Image (cartoon, rainbow, N blue to C red):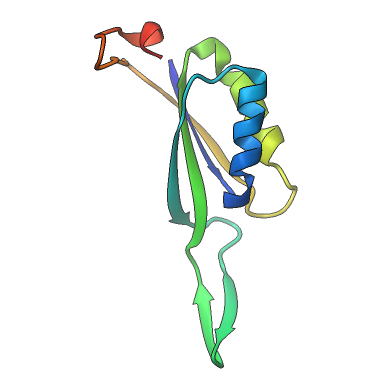
Length: 113
């Protein structure tokens, strides 16, 4: 099993949810609001004449746990749904997951997803 973490633009969340539902490959996901920066570095704005440099940008983190066979398809759907071609589109991280347990039933691993 693998855990897919995607850091995306906030305005692309609905596009991503729609794409995942249409493909029917994801049975659940966790969504968090996060702050961070990468190549985009932030931006400068002026508030009441004061220069303010914002270095931590608001992003959305999506977490999905799936069986190994679904990883490539899920990653492709995420990349297609959220890509704008501009700096700040985000990143996708894939990590191994040792074990999953559904608390309600005690099911484990693939059955718990």
